[in-house]
Length: 174
Length: 418
Image (cartoon, each protein chain N blue to C red):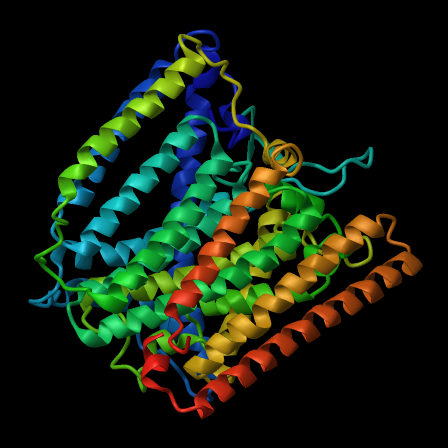
């Protein structure tokens, strides 16, 4: 409905939605580092990741959005919380959450922002992307099981290495 | 932007908007009413199976018992433990309640399925007030992934409820409850993959449309194994007996909801019952053809209901599964925690994965489905599977022997530090 109204111009509704979600994400991201409770920080991070999923839906990438929720919110963050609860799950304010070198993060973040912005601006300049609607899942899987097969496999090996590494670290009888 | 309903293509006018609002209200009401029904149904059925009468005071044959319990829990004092994390403690019941509700939105509750006159399959759309639509709130192309995503969010409710209570017992209860749910989610996803392999689509409406006769039901066409794995994994995911360690009163003060009372406790209770209904609906959709009729010969026995016959079939199949879950509860003894974990990781996941690989091999190397081809594929697959399993067992034994040898040599000072 909205997509057809703006096939060759900028989609206003989509941009407004992007702005609102982005503002929420920034607030949540700041809360991740300023809150004084580890579990609350993890929950704010869940909100940031959910915002990413919402942005994917706005960009008509439904499959990526669902994967984002399944993988990051459903698995990674649950494991995070799991780890926190098995080790230190205090309620209320905690002391000593700040790393003494926290200020180093600011220049890193700025450099990262600049790098990403430069890459995106360099690639797209003033182009308005055609509004094609959602990509069918079949088309997506055809892509990453044919021409993107090797990056896909390489990524899965990274995960395998991480899993083995975790087992080796956790085992006591080395 | 999102192709979830043929209704929303083209310009947005009043009629489609009103139809969508109506559908939202209907789905909401179905969710609530079915939950209340399930509470009564379970109590009556279990009491019947255990040879007692069950609720019989509130209303005729006790049908208002759930309503009375609900009203009571609204008026009970709502305790907030002094050491609780206030915001999260209040948030947790909703995190476990809302996902169960939202699953209803992608379940086809009716519609025109079955073959057309020219042999093609109907896609389940119906015409209401001159608008083409579906008897389901939304049919996103990623349909079934929405179900998986929502059921993975439901873990948060239990996990945070235990943590935010500010007490050790709920915390322990919630940690092991969420470990159980996360473990069985893997088996759930793997058995689902077998269905998706046979359907070739993620949309729930398309999955239903393909199951137009009994032999095409995914129950039959994927072999019965994925269904059994899915059913067991669902039972564990919902913390239903025999996997109900989460609230095993004898073992753990009560589990993650120990500190909850009043309406917040009722919300956890209701979300479990609603989960039973929604997951039964998911099973019916995935394996039993959803609103598709079961033909006896050529006769659709519910055809006299006209356009409602699909919904009636759906409700009938749903009721069958609700009864099955109650039957489980009345029959099976509870598993021990180590049995639970062993069963999930060492039996269910390998079986689901092996069956998925076998189905994939059959599809690839025996596309016509002739008996000779299929037999060859199955024999080769079994041989490969046996070889892989043997190598794995060998590796386990070698590792075990190495560990035993390491234990026999007394650890020296250097041995401890390295």
